[in-house]
Length: 505
Image: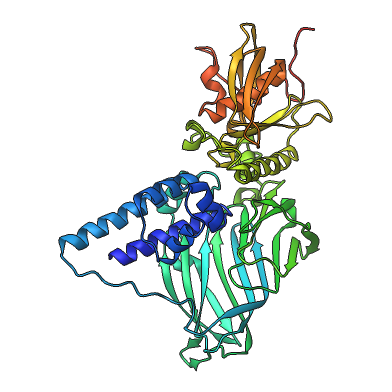
C-alpha cells in the first residue's frame, strides 16, 4: 500500500465514523478542539493525517481503534516509502466529477425493504448538471454499522464478516441503461463507488442543463445492518424522501433525528407516516429544501420477534431476552470497553452546544426504552450507555409528573453512613437484578450549562438512581458494589418488577 492510498483510507474511515455518529464536520472539529475547517481538510486530503488527530478522532467518534489502526497503517506506509528511498509522489487533487461541473438533486428517494433476512436499499435520484462540463461519473457511499454504540464489537464483526461485492449485488441504471461502476474505497464496512455514465454499448454523459434519473440498489444481510438508516445531504437537494418497509407481523415502530452543520441531533420536525402494503408496514418521511450537509437518521425496532426457520417448522422459539431487547434499542451492552472507561467531563460553558446535544440523545433513548418497559422504581441512562464517552446522565424519578434530572459532570461529595440494600437493574445487562448496598443520602455537585457549580442532596430511592448513573460515568457498574459472595439473580427469579423500592417511613 502506498502512502497516498493509506492517507485516503484514513480519511475515508474518519468520514465513515463521522457519518455513523450523525455528526457534521464542524461539530466533530469542535469536540476534538480543532479549527472548524480542519476535519474538512483532512477528509479531502488537503491535510495529512497526524497522530494527535487520529487519537482524538478515534476517541471522540468512539471508533473502537478503527481510526487509530488506519493511522498506524499510514505511518507504516511512510516508513516503507522512506526505506525504499522512493521519491515523493504528488497527490492528485481529485475533483468530485469533472472540472467545471456541478450537480444538484431535484428529487431523492430512498426505499429500504426488509424481508426478515436481508435489507435491500433502492436509491432513485433526479440529477441536474448545473455546471458547464459534461458529468461522466457519480460518487455513492455504502456504510453500515451492526452494533451502534459498540464500535469495537462492530469492527471485530466486520473484520470477521466483511461486506463483499458479491453479497451487495450492486446494480445501477440510467435512462434504462445499465451503468458500469468502479470501487474507490473498499473497507470491511464502508465502500465508496463511482457510478459511470457508460456501459459496453456506449457512453451517455449528463450534459450541462440536462436532468436524468439514476437508480442504484444493493443488498446487505440482517447480520450486517443495524436498526438505523441515515441520509446525508451532500449536494443541493430540492426534495428528499425515505421509505422503510418491514414485515407487518414484526410490529415495527420508527422514529428519527436530524442534525446539521450548526445544530446537534434533534427529533425530526415531522413524524413519518404509516401505511399497510401487501403484508408490509411502510413508513414514509420527506422534506423539501433540506439544508446542505444535514443528516436525517431513521431508527426502528420490532416489537414482535422475527420469524425464524425453526418457527416455520412449528418449533417453539424463546422470546427475545431483555438484554437483546435493550441492544436493539441502542443501549451498549456489558463487555463494551466504553462502559469501563471514565467519561470525559464537559468544559462548560464552552461546550454547551455539545452537552445539550448529548442530553437530547439521552432523552430520545429514554423515550424509546420507556415504550417497551415500565420503570416503577424510576429510570436512568448515562451517555456511555448510548456509546458517548462524556460525563452526563439523565434520571427520571418514579413519581408521576416529576421532572427529569440532568447530571452534568456529577461528583458525589458526601455520603451518609446509613445505607440499605435494594435490587437494581441495569439497561446494559438487563437479564439479571443485583442486590446493591447504597447510602440513603448523598450530596452531589454538578455543573450547570453556564459553568456554575450546583450542589444537590438526594435521598433514598432517588439517591440510589443518581449514584447508579454516576457509577457509569466513572466506568463502573453496580456489580462492583455488591457484597462479596452475592451474585445477581435472573430476571425470571426477581419478584419485584413493577414495584417501587420499599423504605421505612
